Amino acid sequence: MNRTNRDWLPSYYKTDALLPKIPETRALFSFRPYLIQDFIGKSISFLESDELKGMGFKYDYRRVLPCRWKCSDESLFGVDLAIYAYTKAYPFDKGRIGGYFNPDSLGAAVHHGSINVDVGGSHVGYLPDNDGGTFGKVWRPAEREFSADCGHIMAVLAPFKRVYDDACNNILLLKPESERALVSIPNEYVQPSWSSEQIKLLVDLDKLTDGEVDYKHDLLHTHTMIGRSLFYLHKQFQDGLDEVAAQKLCTPKPKRIGRHLTHRFFNIWDTRAEMKDGMPRLRLHLYMKFMLSARNSPPALKAAVTNTAIEHNRLADAVRANTFQNYDFISFSGIFIDQYCKEAKSYVNLFQPMGMTIKPRGQTREREYSPDEIHDILERMPLATPKMPLEGVFGYKRPQHILDSFTFKPGVFNRKEDLSCEI
Ligand SMILES: [Zn+2]
Image 1 (tube, helix red, strand yellow):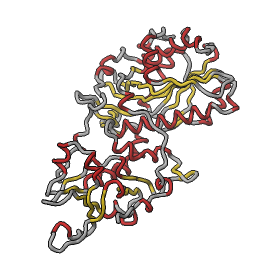
Image 2: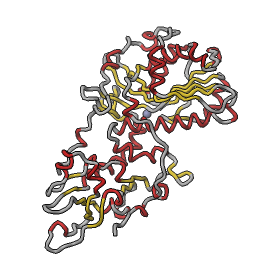
Image 3: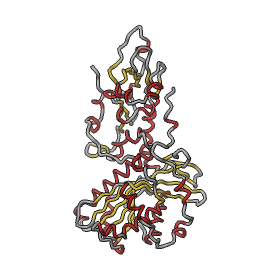
Image 4: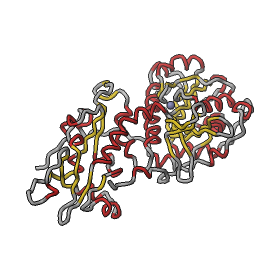
């Protein structure tokens, strides 16, 4: 009989309950992001267009309160400058450090302007190169070093990533002569009390393995190694490998499982996470295994996408409340991509929209627009005329070279360090 280890999981992981879906990074980045100033300029043209009027939305610019929700990081100040240059208004802050939406800000915001136009999301640093670049870091001129960006989100990810990387490096695959493929798993990834870590990772024995390997005195590879358990490798895992990977991994000499440890084959959780209603208060935790093992996205970018999706949903939910029925909300949510430009001596922000929702007053449900629709609308829109010259407000010329240096496309990015399976 094949034994399961699912009973060791926290209750919110035990069931095969479906989690709400997060937009695929691959689909989002089939479009190029905008320079934030271009995005704001085109959005304003859209807000003033007949196209919006046709949607039954009465846009009276005198009643507009531009708002932003984003991290507190100074690398994102370009967003505020772009809003200021185009509207001559200081954006109202609906955000908190980490790129979280702050629902307590809504009461004041609607009294300051009954049409709230929100721009918000998570941010992620980007170091460009010709291979798609690296996400999660940015140049800090004051310290003259590269450091984490968004520092908060990267700090949330870091302890999970350390445990996940360890599992990738220490779960071993092998195929002894005239034997089925096997998987050797450190005991702490089979049963959680074998590790003193606060973060626990458990492989899914039901999906990765197909029964324990019995001890046979004359077969050396079946002798139990102290600290490890040995299983037959599940056919489902082998079927998921392409031919090259299968040849590389299933050899008499043990190989690391590496990034082939995808979300189907493990669960990871923080035993001391702050809980609310039986689940981690930070919903980002529920998506941890998807962020760590994403195939088409570096973890830092996937984390920004996931956090933006979660927080946009919180915002859309908050404005549906009865209290806000008589106000208008237009919300653009997406990912801010930060780079430091040494010539301009300034941070420059790109923006990749993930969604737009329009909730006219009197209605409780918003109309939603997909990234395709947003790009389609904005492509047709001219840049509005800024209220103040952009160059004067930003203090540098249009940073076209920063936009041009963004080479990330789905499937094109650096993850070379993760791919080695040699021990
Ligand atoms: Zn941040």
